[in-house]
Length: 316
Length: 204
Image (tube, rainbow over all chains, first blue to last red; front, side, top):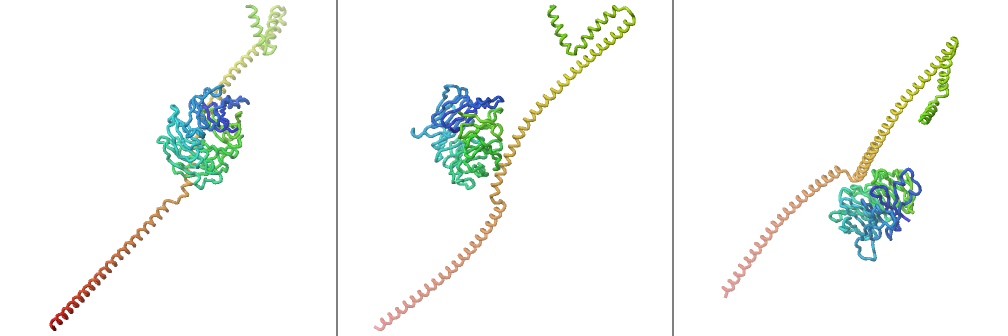
């Protein structure tokens, strides 16, 4: 079993995790972090079958948990999660060309500025869905293969998408047009042709961007579109995050890597999973400010201090 | 009512008895000896008993004084502990505040470090590009060379034009001369043929 996606609740006290069997488990972080935590507090508060296919992405709004799978997005109310017989509040299916080939939705990003959801997946198009009405307002086409990851720039209304065709494209969300195209594999410093040119993970900090996957994990300066630092990590990375002054990366190599922006490795912390698939930082509650790391195993590691693994939550 | 007060009395006595069996017994003995002294007859015995009673009395007063002092001391100790407790509480809150201040400072320092590293990364990239002054100088030198070469080209072209015109003049003069010569020949030929025709006519 692999845990493919995680999301923290709006109050910050619960964590939802989705796996590749379509199940979503809800864990209570406040119980697991409290002083009298026992073995049962590390087990999920509730597990339910969300989709028939794997849950690829999760996102949380103020009241709902959104989960994305093969061709559909479902919303669940956070207040009802984990109770028996909880049903989804709504289901939306983005338009697809044929009903035989339903493309999976690989990534969800919430744009709180205009209450919309940006999603992208197997058909290579980035779509913007308005959360109130549920209509798909923009369809941004350009990628020639499927899209793996999305990131939103905070200071400009732009969205970045990285995909299997090896390009990172910047889209303007107001006009719906492609602003820039970066072909990562064409730059010699970071390309690794033996791994391929696919871009699996993106993270952005408005002026800077980190992307990795087939090519090496690199830090880019977006305004001049130059790769500034290449992080020395041979395995391919699946998920990357900016946190304070560090870049956290998890992928096929064992352990969570923490780099400084200059490229130095600050720490490599061993985790329970042999490969890491997703990282989630819980910003929403100051008492439960933890980093949860999950990958190809039913255990989700919880880090209270980035230097070591505090304990693990068990999915099953 | 009597039972309650008895209980109270017993409780109080048991509590006070923590001082040791001495004081209570001493007071009882004093009372008994007082009664004996009042009933006694002879004077020396009475006097010695009187002295003994005075000494027991002073012993009782002494122990009472001691208890009062201990009570005072306890009160003052309590005040002292209260003060220390308040001090410790204050320093705990101050430490909490300092901790949160330091956390803010850490965040600030991390932001500064991040900015510095971003600056360094960009600076490294910029260093790869050649220096601006040198490039400008190279551009200037190249511009001057270009100007110089275009000057030379202009001069050469002018010279070429001039020579071409001179040749043109020369060639046209030659051509005219040729024409004039040909005309002259034609004229002289025509004159000659006219003369021979006139001669044949006159001969006939």
